[in-house]
Image (cartoon, rainbow, N blue to C red; front, side, top):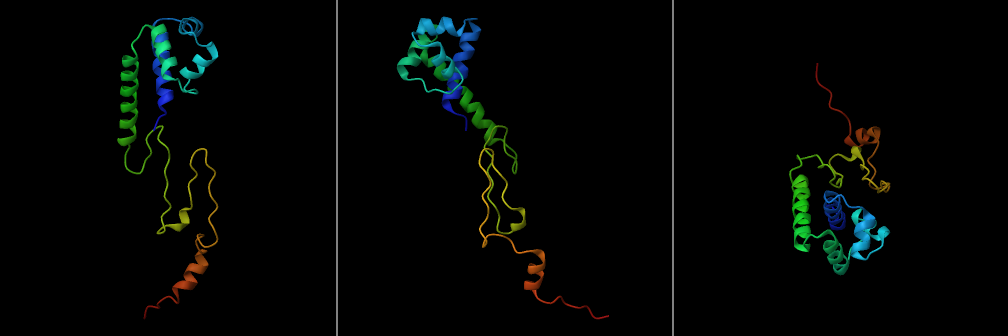
Length: 143
């Protein structure tokens, strides 16, 4: 799921670039620091409602239009995730993996940014030799 602040920043940047305006121009018109506006556009800072209203006024676009575009972008992102084929993660979707007790030899697949967890001794699958020993003697076919 995409971050709302990232989508909001992308929409604000699109409006600014469509108007061929610089960050400096919009930041001075909105009464906000250039660095903070840059952080908002990159989705690194949350814009307060007052700040967002000031930026929209500086860009001469209504807040409702900006929020409508954010909503449309969010809906598109959600459709990408929902339409992913079974067994595959959609582009940009977080990887999810639930280890199956039926196939313990697969282990745990690492998820981006999260180091894999080392299974405890009781969770580790037995070696193939130990599995054969536990199965008992093999049946012998009569000749």
